[in-house]
Picture 1 (cartoon, rainbow, N blue to C red):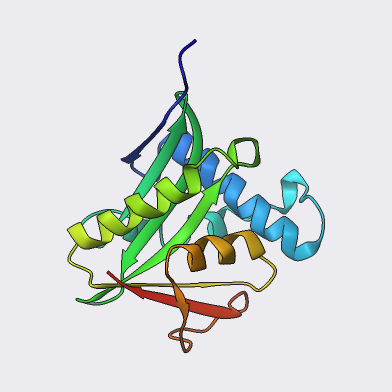
Picture 2 (cartoon, helix red, strand yellow; picture 1 turned 180 degrees about the vertical axis):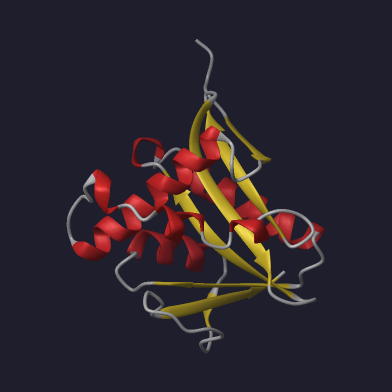
Length: 161
């Protein structure tokens, strides 16, 4: 029996798979924030699409992870300046969690950040996203002072590459 494997590669954010993954990411984090599954008419496409132009070289990168050929994970990074890249939209679909994809995704994002010239990676998240916070700390990210502000930002992390 063949064992399924993860495959991560850069992908344009507007492909059908990347768009569906970004939508699922938003549904997950927004649904958790509101404490319920969002109805179809509650999705704000402008919010889902915000900043997408930055998730492509030379300003950034977007990775899509497939497990057994099925789109299962995504993550992006954006260069903030000559030295720092910010992680964003880091997500593994629930059906694919526990299969090692999150760690591979983080490795791929950090490799992409280095390729873009970053020496440090930063990110922000919410306190209730405990799985994400555990992933970041497992990969060596430590809490740092806030480098940006926004309504859904409660904790900031950074790591030297």
